[in-house]
Amino acid sequence: MTVHDRARTRRPAAALLSAGVLAGLMAPATAAAAPVTPSDDEARAARHAVASGQSAVAGIEVELARLSATRDEADVAARTAAEAYLRAAEDRDAAAAESAQAAQRLQDASVSMEAARRTLVAIAVQAGRSGGAVDGVEAFLSADGFDDMVDRSAALSRLGGKADRAVQQFRAAKVVADTLKRRADAAVDESKDAAAAAETALATAEQAEDEAQRAVAAAESQRESLIVQLAAARSTSAEIERARQDRVDAERAARVDAAALAQRTAAPSTAPTAAAPAAAAPAAAGRAAPAAPAPSAPPAPAAPPPAAPAPSAPPAAAPAPAPAPAPAPAPAPAPAPAPAPAPAPTPAPAPAAPGLGTGTSRGSAGQGAAAVAWAKANLGLEYVLGANGPTQYDCSSFTGAAWRSAGLTLPRTSRDQYRQTLKISYDALRPGDLIFWGSDPADPSSVYHVAMYAGGGQVVEAARPGVPTRISSMAGRWANTMPFAGRP
Image 1: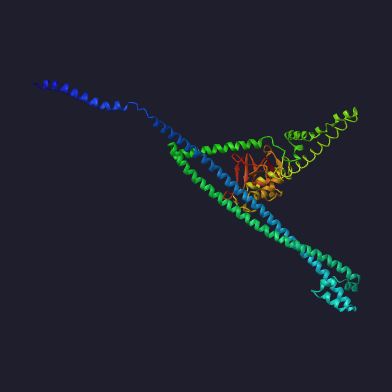
Image 2: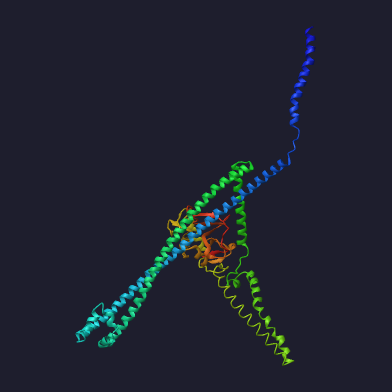
């Protein structure tokens, strides 16, 4: 057999071998490509896993939102406690001043009483030299027996009319001195109580600030942990989820801020105040209209006029029914409206916010611009609760110092600044006006921060511990603002 014959013999064999190998390789691939239908249990398990994952993601997102609210609540609580301390410190200082004044008045009265006593002593000595009773003289000269001697009319009569006038002066001076002594003692006690209350309020404020910082730190730590869990549940990275959550928080804050801004720039209400409706918005007049029909309702029972013509025709039968219904409705309306309006308005005005146009404004636009200029020249100063300058301030002492530099004095606390200043709408803001934040828009006592409008949508402020005096934008700051701005 030649070489060519052998080659021809090998070729069919090789072809058969290659075909067999190729068939063996293709068989598994063909089998793997065959579709596999999951069982009902497997399908249910898959759906449950997807639902559980979605539920876990939703729960994490809810917790992240709650943590954001926790941070805000902790900050408000700390600021509110700080404002309470400032109020207590004001009471302490006022009580200390009253105690000092009472002590001075007591000292003056004691001097007058001593002068009257000396006059009496001189009269007694003179009487003794003129041959008067020695025991009377001794009584006047004795510190122990002096008061007793004044009360003995027989002894006084021996000293004559001049002594009587001196005794009257002494008695009057002593009454005044005794009264002022009691008041001075009470003022001292009040001053001590106020000082103790201020110390307690300061400790509470410092504790609230510490708790707020711990709450923020804990919330940030928990937020980071939840973001890692969220990334695992969504099969993404922590960086992606962190950026996404930052965007979610920013969008949530923007919605809250936009709603607050829309509310503040809407037509302001003057309903809380009695004087404001006459001076301001027609909306308040619209509210007053329903109040008028309410009183006019009682005249309805006065429908006895129709009963009056009836008596004129039949004098006997008609008058009898007329008096009977008249007394019946009369007692009912009288007691019902009387007690109801009395208690209702009493609690309402207490928490009600001052209306538009209430308060007083004594400053000018020029003074407002000067106050802003002073504040801008004092940026970067340290925030210290209760500080009054010149290198450390809190929020209300900073606005107070700015306006004082322009020649106008403001109350010490942000709450009192809100109560005193003229209430204006936010669309009327000009540089120097004050913007307030509070936990309850209807209650001036809930105010916890004040900043000064600098123009261009910005405020200048002493914000909080750890943040120096600064200029900041009002964008994102409208939540928790009070219904009105204040014009000093």
